Every structure is written in C-alpha cells, then in structure tokens.
Amino acid sequence: MQNNYLKISEVIEPATVDLTMDGIQKKEEAIDFLADLLDKAGHLSNKAEYIQSVYEREKLGPTYMGNFIAIPHGKSDAVIEAGVAFGRSPQGFQYETDLGGGEVKLVFLLAIPNRMSADAYMAVLARLARLLVHSEFCDDLYAAKGYQDIYNAILNGEKHLEDLAQSKS
Image 1 (cartoon, helix red, strand yellow):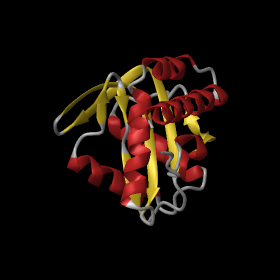
Image 2 (cartoon, rainbow, N blue to C red; image 1 turned 60 degrees about the vertical axis):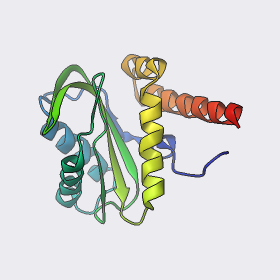
Image 3 (cartoon, rainbow, N blue to C red; image 1 turned 135 degrees about the vertical axis):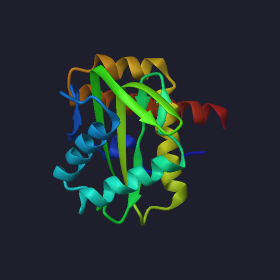
Image 4 (cartoon, rainbow, N blue to C red; image 1 turned 30 degrees about the horizontal axis):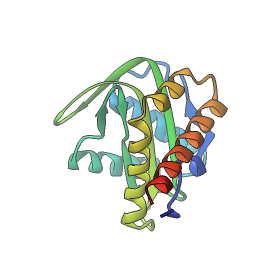
C-alpha cells in the first residue's frame, strides 16, 4: 500500500543543507543555524516563532535519537511551506535534553505548517526515522560531498522503503 504523504526528497533543497556546521557546539546553536537556513530559503514567516515551536516539541520528549543523530522538529503557523534542513557536523556537538542526550553529527530539522494533518506530520517523521536506522543511509550522509549526494541518498533510501513496503503487501 503506497501512501501519498510528503517525502523528505520533495522538501530538501540546496539552500537548506550544510555539511560543515562550522562553530556549532550545542543543540541550541544547531537549531538556530538550521532554522536560519529554512528562513533564508523562504520556508518561515517568523523564525523566532518557529524555533519556539521546536522547543515546545522538545518538552514533549527528546529528539536525540542516539547514534549521533537528532531530528528536532516544529509545527507552527510560522511555517509557510514544509521544509527540511540537514546539517552534518564532522566534529560533532552536544545535544542535551531534559532526559539526557549525547553527541550529534547528523541533524535533520523539520519545519511543518500547522495546516498539515497530524497523520501526515507523523508519517514524515516516521519515514525519516526508518531511513536513519539503515547504516547504509547514514554512511551515504557521512560520505556526501555536496547537496546532490545528500539528495541521492534520501531518494535512494525512500525508494528502498517503498520497495520494502511493496514486497510486504
């Protein structure tokens, strides 16, 4: 059964990908940095309001996933169109939460408009989480030299998930 929910490959773009995250040393700096990419790419009407929604979501449960990965996200009226910012930090940075945390090297920041249904929102998160459990996908993200490599990794990962879903039906 194929769903028609939003795909990461449909909303990531060159302007929202950074493969060095120079100077980032903690979670708050990473969220601000990646939100700035989303803002400059035209996804946000109010960066501060969007960031507030990310921290409100953080209070519900940590978005640190282990394995050097974090997926912070916020759903807000300040999001004009859904977007994803991706950052890779070769040196890593601390991603502390109320329930612990750890070192992060890969971070996806999702910006979701309030008008998106809860089911569609959860489907985007679930798809990304399923991609990130595959070591080949993470290896491709670490090896990427530029945006096109990131895009291809996401596209190939999404195709792999669709193939798996079809083989089970």
